[in-house]
Structure formats: C-alpha cells, structure tokens
Image 1 (tube, each protein chain N blue to C red):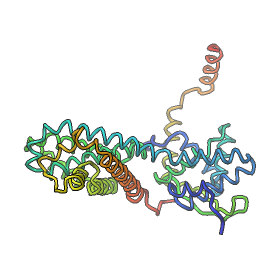
Image 2: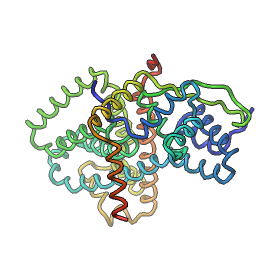
Image 3: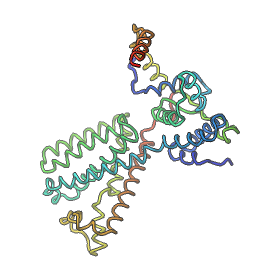
Image 4: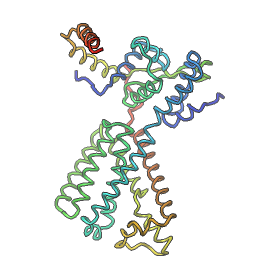
Amino acid sequence: MKADLSLGGFEQVVLLAALRLADKAYGVAILEEIALHVGRAPSPGALYTTLHRMEEKGLITYVDGEPTPERGGRAKRFVVVTYKGRTALASVQAAYESLSKGLDLSSLLTFALQERGADA
Amino acid sequence: MRSRNLTEVLLTGMVGKERAAAIAGDLLELAYRRGRIWYYVACAKTVFAFTWRLPTALLVACMGFILVQLLGWALYPLVRPVWLKHPYVTETLERAACDLVFLIVFAVIRYGARDRFFRLSVAASVIAGLAFVGLRMSVPVTVLAALGLLGLVGLLVSTQWRGATVALGLAVAIGILMDLNFGNLAHLYCWVYEHKPLNATSHYRYFELGYAFPHTVFLIVTWTIFVLDALTLSVACSRLHRFLLSPPDDVELA
C-alpha cells in the first residue's frame, strides 16, 4: 500500500486518539486522551484547526450529540474517522513500522540520552 | 434560546454555526476545571488560530498584486504596439495575470502549497505571464493558447481537478469583472476631473506619478476601491474553494 505521507504527525496523533475514544471522541476528550499518552496537552486552537483541516481532506466527519448544561446548552460534536482517514492512517503507520523494522529503537534512545548528557 | 458568546460569533464565520457552538461548548467545559483566565486565553488563541490566515493572506496578496502591477508597467513598452492594436485582449490578459498573482499568494497562505487551487493558479499564471510577455510573437502565443485550451479540457474532464478548475475560472472572471487594477479608475478620473471619456491611446499617462496621484480624492478613491476589490476577490476565492473543493457530504464511514 502506498503510504499517505501528506498526513502530518499531529494529524496522526489526533486520528489515533479519536479511534481510541471510538464513539466518545469530541474536542475535550481528544485533548485529554492526547495529554494522557503524549504527556503534554495541545492547545485547543491547534486541535480544532487540525480537525477542521482533516474534515476538509475527508479524513473525519462529525455526529451531533446532545446539549449539556456545563457546556452552556451547546451540543457536543463527536468525531468519526472516515474510511479514507483510517486507510491513510493505516498506510502511514505501516510505512513507519516497515522503516523502523530491524532498528533497535530502545538503544537509539539510550544513545541519544547519553549524547545529551555528554553535551550538558 | 441560549446566548452566543463572542468566541462563538467570531468562529461562526470561519467554521459554521454548529462547529463554532461545539468549540465554544468545549472551551466552557474545560473552563470549569482550568479557570476563567485560562478560558479567555484559550478563546483568544482559538479564534486567532482560525482567523490569522485570512487577513495575512489578504495583506500579502495585495502587496504581491501591487508588485506585479509595477512589473506590468515596466513591461509595458515591450507590448505597447500589440496593446494599442488589440487593447481589450491585452488588457483582459493583463488583468487575468494580475488576478492570478493575487490568488496564488492568497491561496498558498490560506490553503497551503499542496492545495489544488494554488497549484492550478501557479500553472495558469505562468501561461498568462508567458502570453503577456510574448504578445508580439504570434506563433508561440498561438501554440501556447492551443496547449492551454487542451490542458483546460483535460482538467475539466478530470474528476480530481474539475472543482479547482471551475473555482479558479470563476475567481479570475470575478476579478476581471471587479476590475482589480487601476484601469477603470483612470476612466473615472477623466469623468470627474475633465468631464470627458478617456482616450485609449493616452490611457497610461494617467498613471504617471505627478499627474494623477497629487489629487487626494483620486488617491483615496483608488485605494478604497482597490481594498474593496481585493476583499471581494478573497471572499469569492474562499467561498468557491469551500463549495467546489470540499469533500462530498456522503463520506464513506465503513
């Protein structure tokens, strides 16, 4: 499969978070899921512009939820990853996996940390 | 009926009513845990993230347009004989080329270099630019026109490029209709100050510094119309891009 390398790094993170959350993937939940796994919460602006761009590319679509009082009566919009989105993500992840096959990533990390220690 | 806050109102123009409401709701939900100051900062950053491209694109596109106008005036002696012989063809070509430059700069900032509308604008402007410069040489221009027409047919047949082609064609047509250059302002100037129609052969003396520009009214009118034209073209480009290049609603979910 030809990998869709136009899919940016953050786009992949957002798609993965949305897929993990399944039918509970809306803005706040995606931000929290990313913070939990990446260790740093992205700014809401970065998330929403990325979602907007991915919708324009046809990678995601939305399903409306019910309005809630803590949201000032505003409805949640749940992110649904489309077939195109899943295919693009799968292809780029497969390409990364193929490229990293045979590489000892843990030793690379150790080496990088040692180098940083030496620089300091 | 629930009230809309400023963030929602500002975002509605960029992402639509439902999405703006959902974003405002998300920020409000997060504000319960993160506090009021975080909420205002997050609102400002979110609005900025969505809106900075439009004014920046407009500003830089206007600057690009002015530069290409200056280049056009510099090249004018080169095409002057053909221009005087076929004033309407050459003027339309020049306007199309100028509109294309505006659209290239606007599209690359607004939509990025991978965007089809942008890539097509670049190709079209190269063709229009070559045609403009080579006006005196009829054979190469005829060949270029034939190749351009063939390319146009190919683009309209292609399902991937049809939307971008129609959007670009309509945007350029709107630009020409809006007369996004100072040409007709010279006509206006003649009517206002000299009470007579402009003579095509003396058209360009009205642009010479020291003749038209000392008149404050002319200067204000010129720039106001220019900014309004640029705004119209940018809005037209954005709308056409949204309607003709967005993915279809029936996206495949399975």
